[in-house]
Image 1 (tube, rainbow, N blue to C red):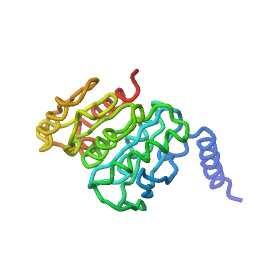
Image 2 (image 1 turned 60 degrees about the horizontal axis):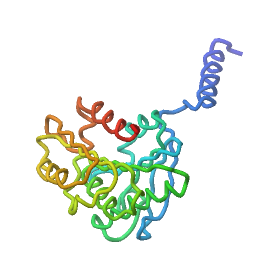
Image 3 (image 1 turned 90 degrees about the vertical axis):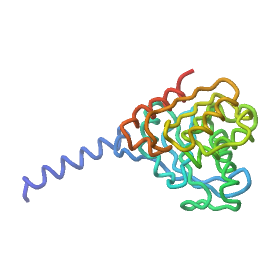
Length: 225
């Protein structure tokens, strides 16, 4: 028996076992779940973490549920239960209606979390997902969505109908910026608008040097009382 080869292999096996027992085996620990949108469409999502304070992550047109992985992992460290959804037409999610019906996917995600023990549910939406999140907020029952973060959200009608605490984030050079500032002005309190330098759009902000700042803004808005 070659003991020199056995020792490193045994050490690695013990290390992997210890990591598994302590819950640190992987930086990508999540499970895929599915549920019904409020109009009956089928939505698939990645569920991270645990707890009774939850957040739905709604992706932009060029993204999918996996695009939120790095942000989801960081939010889990703050004790949040995170649900990153695939909109209908993305991945295995399926339903009729296209963009105009995507708000129902967000509402389905919110209700899924509440039905599974979440006491507070917030929503973060980027670009297309922000537009869907805003419409979901407008159509939601009072108290269903506690906090809403719109990351360069697609223009939304009836911003005065948005519910809960609202955080608007957009780059000054983003083409959506004027509409977002106008929506902010018409939205009810409590609310906050953060204008960032540059022109990076929505989730693309996480690829810039401002990414950590954006994530910290989101984390604070979700966790502060």
